Image 1 (cartoon, one colour):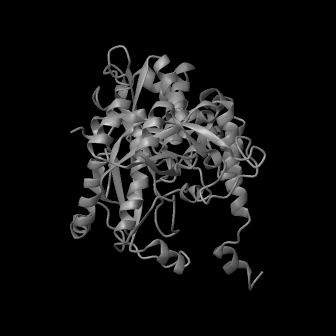
Image 2: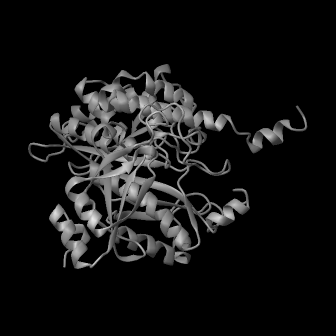
Image 3: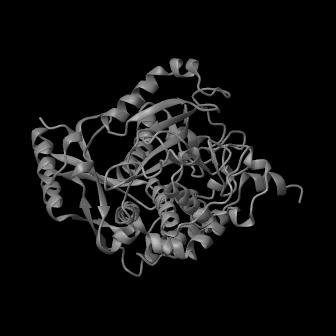
Length: 457
């Protein structure tokens, strides 16, 4: 009997479906916000789609996370009639599914014209650029997320107020908490093994009901797949157990925001050696790693929308809450946006600490990797590293990050580097979707405004 993790080819995919005597399988793809959209597909349709692909309504490229249609997109819209777009199934993404014994899941991705704005296709373009430069990229993502004793119905009945986390108060790295909730932790860890997004570490973070999961390292494509699936099925697991998990950047002004940190390293394709490690240099940083960090630093203000893609993302980027506020770098410094982690040839890497948990993993990784490759390509040099508390120091004006989603969208829209890395079609489309997101927010009145202005102003 073939295991899901061993499926590599079309023939393998057909074989495992036959061996399990499945009438249907689940297929899905990730939209511009990193949300998995998909369906159950009959065995016959699946087999034919493995060979020739299938059609998926391209509306998923033309609507937001609430299924509201963009009014400013060129990729698809009422003017095109929202036609079907071609999609391919990726046999080597086969997975078992938590709480669906015997059932299988396959990731798909857009091809042809739609591939230009497909998040997975955008990442692949950057990975291929790295390969052409002689590098293989490896990454691991880690996420903070809050868990609540709530359901989709209860949060709506409460109007998303007075929500009850699964545990109270601040208590990071708590053995008491992870022992009291050990059943939940074991379910999470079992799911991660079953669905092939293995977790290296799982612990409480500082805040009521907040957990952090560090996913295992893999090549860049595998790392992004793992991250996107983890976010999706962590929510599934929570809801199936009468809880809810949120990855929004900041759900409360009283607690720290939720990060989506990215650990990145490069290997030389020719021999598999580390491209970042040089024992003869300070902090073991090779010239390649120095240029890589410089590129990440230089392009951070221009690419911020890919790491902080929602209005809520910018509530997290404030001093003193473990989120960077300028494009800074340091060695083993968690107050900077980029943290160089010295180590052996195996562990030398850089942590991109800027991203929030709400980012699309494919796009965040594409931006972090692409910016680094840009730095290598142009032999950029970073600004002086920050030592000590980055929040208390003044930095060069060009290192300042945009403070709103709208500003970030404008920086991205006009970034020549972004267009060179990701393609003009992607940049135009993604910037337009972020402009839409900001405009949708402006149409609504917040509780803060009502409380502040209704009676007094």
